[in-house]
Image 1: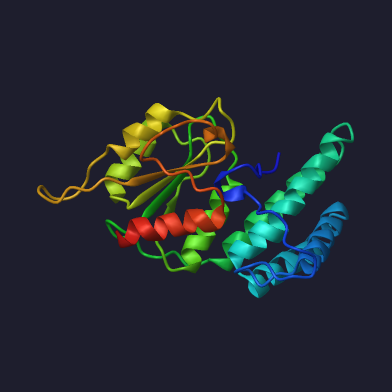
Image 2: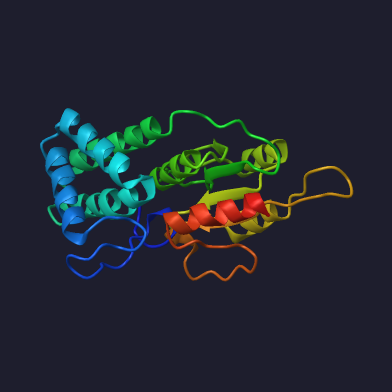
Length: 241
């Protein structure tokens, strides 16, 4: 399935008035709809060259956050609804689209920013979770801003997550959970309690709970950014703090 639009790096904001620009994105509602339709048609045709071109153009023209929020995510959701309502046909289209989106994200931010203690962000799916695309979008958006990221992808074992946090001394840790069955508040709290740094100047990472799996869970001190732009802002705040 495509990443859910509920929470984390995947939430899409409500539509703006027709013909009016959306604040902070430069995208007009009609333009966004046309771009979504173009991407969806290329995916349905399994046209790799056209799809890559449309995704690259959207990211270059609007920036990664706006392209993800207003073009890529709505198209992923539409394709997901299409196969769910058609007896699970079009699964190949969903896989094809997701693969090309992943490639577009990596090509947009190909340069790895050198990590340094107190400025790095660790991104990982919680154990048992393999929906990596929203985290890939966040990793690319942070790299676009010159912020160092260490991406560990899907279903990172808890002990490996803890080891990665201890070794990198990150300012922030983003944990993606697509479902309530994988979201683990005890794990999030444990990571938030990890200390690093020299004695007398210990620090702890800011743990961002990302994705719809964390919805409805009250965890004081563990921010849950509602969208990609908010997640980027939360990381920037953690790094500068």
